[in-house]
Length: 436
Image (cartoon, rainbow, N blue to C red; front, side):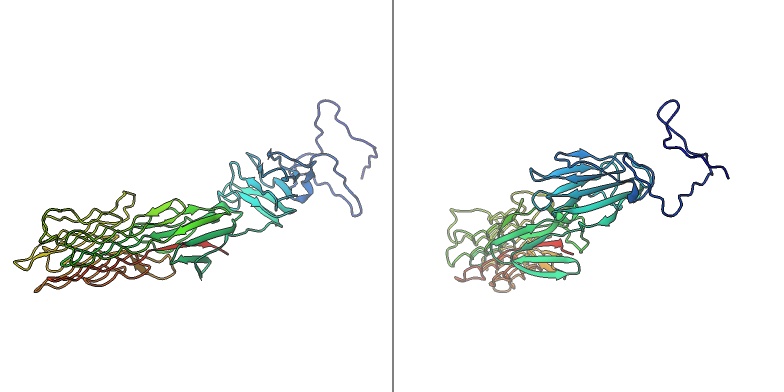
């Protein structure tokens, strides 16, 4: 065995020195120490990390380097290399992550099979990322900044699997104290239902259901209604005011010149659902004020042929938040008679049918179990013809209130006589997100 002893190897020409040829093996004996004062690449482990001076600005990282990031002056973004190779490694320490977060931008590659960026939001949180392949991208070789999740309060909180559900039966605040360090986990599912409209008096139309709007987050898989948006809302750490609309009042009898009142709107973030339109009375004997039932999320039922039904999905949104009410008609000498209120998924039944039922609502599993909301109110009946049933989802039968916190329309008042219409049910807001 030959032995060469030198103090330094340098390139004779150029800047590169090749050690051995393909297939050669070099053995480093026990007790030998290798000291790297430059940049090492291609070793595929933590041994190739060359730590850099503290950075205070957004930086595109280089494989083989480690970065101390000072974010005390504001949030920073550290961008991963654009064309990584197998075993490329970078390391990041967020010195002030609890003050201002440090985002790890994925650039052109995935991170653990996902297109999400990462965020370090703890002081001295540290990550070492190693590149594997195009399908899996970078993976966390060490993870001293584990995934965090949304933390929030407000309403009545329950859980279903990995998801937390906040139900608001009255106006309040949804307070997000902290967001997730994965962007996709900050998308929340929602359902916003407005208050149902009140029913018309004697022989009146049913109240329209409160507007129904739903969006399922891309990170969730519960069974949605046919009206899914289909996207949730991305939230951040802040307070979101929640408005839950009240049900509209039924028209007092015997006015015979108007309609039940419109339900109140419900809101969350950028989503507003309109209150249901009031059901129309039969407008007899006064014939000077012919007008349709009220418009809103669901349209109020008409009452008498000339007093047509109200228009649903007002103002218009997509998917539609409700349907039209049913028209009223005359009933063979028994007086005018109302139509059913419009529901979330069906129009109110016109009173030229055997019974003027309210339109059906929408069923969703957002709360963890199948529940229907926003049914239209049933029409008031006349002798020889039954009152209409409320639509599935809390709609009140003729002469009955809509159910609370469903957005159901109130039932129309029966006739002939002086009976007033019934009140609509109040609305509800539900927010659902991944919490573990």
